[in-house]
Image (tube, rainbow, N blue to C red):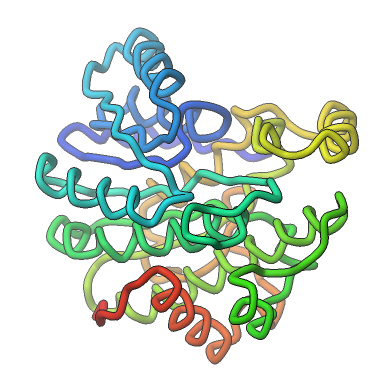
Length: 298
C-alpha cells in the first residue's frame, strides 16, 4: 500500500471525522491531530469516543480534540449534531465521512441500518454542513467507500417500498447490502461534485483497502464467523487503511479530480454504474426525500 508522505500542516484548520473512536477513523484522527488540526470526533458511543480523544491528545500532543455526539442511525441526531457544530465551531475545512455499519437492524427512522448509516446519515450531515464548508473554502469532503461497490447496485423500487437497498437475512444478503451502500457513496460524491462546481469545495470517494476494523461488531453471529477468519488472513492493518483518506484530504493539486474515486493514493476508473449521471441525480433526490431535506444545495 502506497504511503502518504507529504508533511502538510493543518494548524488553524478544523476536521470532522465520523466513526473516529476506532479503526480507520481513529487512525485518521491521530494523523491529522499530529498535523495540528482541531479534530471533531463525531461518534455515537460517548465512553469510547472520550477514551479515544484522551489517547489521541496524549499521542499527538494536540489538545484540540473534541468529542461531539453523532448517531448516524438517527436523522434527528444528525440534525442536532450539525446545529450544535454550527453554533460552537467557526470553521470546517475537511469533512471525512468515515463511519460504516454492517447489521440487519433498522434505524430510528425505519431505514435499513446499512443504508441509513453508510449513506443517508452521511448525505444529510454533508448537506447540512455545506454552507460552512463553502465559507471556509478551499475545503474538502472525503467519503470512505469500498471496492465492493463493483458488485453493488441501486434498486430504487426496493428503496421506495422498503426504505432499504435490498431484502434477505443471510450473511450473503448482508454483504450485498454493504456493497450497495458503497456504490451509493460513490454516486453521492459524483453528484455532489456537480453541485459544488465553482464553490472551491471539492469531494472525493475512496477505497481504503481491505482493512481489519470493528465494522462488523454489530452484525449477527453467522456474519462474524464468516468475516473474522477472512479478515485475519487477508486484511491489512489500520495504518495502511488511512493512507488514501489522507491523500484525498490533503494532497495538493487534485482539485480538478473532484467527484472521482481513489484507491492506493491514486485516482481510479470506476465502472459505468458508479458514474451514471441519471442514477446519481435520482439517488440524490431520493436521499433528500428520505432524510426530510427538500432544499437546494447550490
